[in-house]
Image (tube, rainbow, N blue to C red):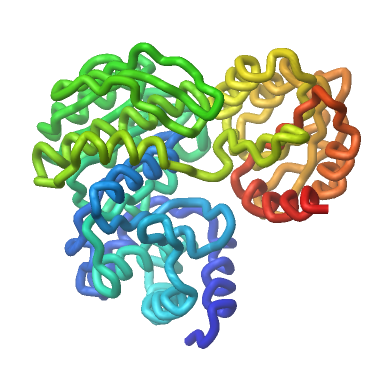
Length: 435
């Protein structure tokens, strides 16, 4: 058993070696042993390819403004492991991590000796979240972010009040499938009988799969472009401004502080979900809570301006759709600037298209690598680039320092790629800038 936080987290991270093991049997076994803490939780379940974390943040902020105590379960963490399980945006204390790890450890040992096999890192953390919000520290509502896919994701043992599927993109294709329809089938696995679905899925073949599932489950659907309409969108210096129409209301001049058109879609899903909670589950959410909640919402690593002089932006564009959104935003906001990019990613991503998109906007691009089991090598990324001004450096800290030191007056630096990298890099970047 564990006596310190460091021991507990080290044990949890040691499970990374087991990789991804889709399926719910191990989770169901652990919940049975814990007397089903997940059944005591009122929740919202959020899946999709991109935008899950931002949508969680918008909805949490709205609910907090309404006076509710809101738990969140998200991944990956950005600055500290405890962020994975938070209350009102505040990571839970170290001592609670130790307590939870000691709750789950004996089950992990018992399971490892059974035909089910050892639980993965994500399964252990998910079980910890269920135990925390179900037994140790109950809250008004918990927002559970899907880890991977949906149908066989560890979180998919919840029975939520509302389900959200943000969008569909070609990510994790080795596990989820090669087409939008195949991936939509996996994401649609979170749709439950009679439980409203709010979605931003756009591709016709993917949306058809989603609609078939909601019909089968007799689940009401609120779809972006149909029941949810965004109009009068404009970018501001600090974010975005838009009007949203739902079956229940027209929301004039909603304002968000996270940049990008895609963020208006994430925010729109949160607004729609808050309306469902208000209309059908007696959550007392007023107009002012929605407006104030959206404006205050902040999620690190999403087109985050770290510095104004020089201009340094960090963005967790970790797949093709994320890179496209980043490139569009850079083209809109920094047309007259020279763009320097530092990029790294996980090796199991579709890297060629991501890099081609970045090449198209970068005046200079540097590829780096970081210490993570699935991380791509800097030289391999470099070889995929067709940029005439490309470099690679295995030492990402030196690469960033060199890029900052050579920035001229009208240059900007964009550090992007894996969220795992950004979480490791950001505190170092802040120290470099302090110097």
